[in-house]
Length: 210
Image (cartoon, rainbow, N blue to C red; front, side, top):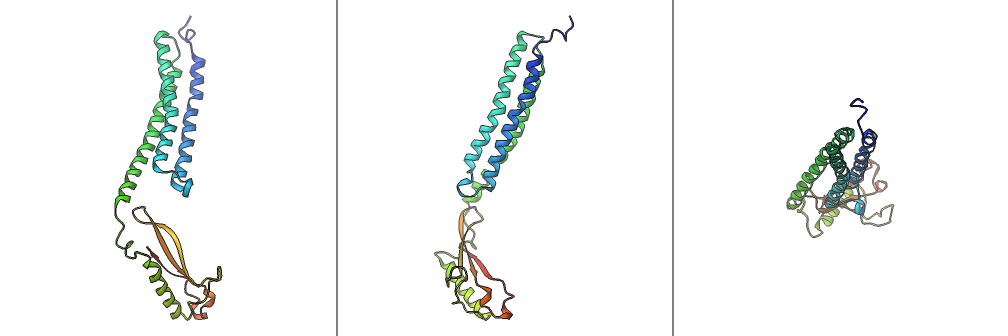
């Protein structure tokens, strides 16, 4: 009987080679969803850096632990049966190497990004970002906006077409350079109240951040 005829465990090895990469696919799908929620999520849908790291580690554990377990079992069987197929061992080793390499790069990149964000958030706001404090940004922008409207031939007391308010200041959330939350004010005036020669001016007079 030839050496090939006496080889055992070929079917098991092929099954391992076919099924084990599925753990990589599941891991990568989880990583993709987590990355999107961390990078593009808004409000409660956005994952924090800590939660993202936890999901990355959990997803990585699937292919790493499963392939490592299969590798140990395959090596143990081959230790007692020298004719046992090496297909399963090689498949487990390849999946383990790919899992460690891809997840190691992803987790390492996330840790670097988290450390960079933490450093930036530890920095104080810039002088420009703290120039207006205590709500003075809103009033300063109102004076500038009203004066600009008057120069363009408009009447600042005209109400907005949308809500009927004469308050032309819009408040929006924004991010400061260090990642902290700030407030952005915009002065918006309805074009229809301006003179024909002034309608070429943009509706938004200016932006001021507090």
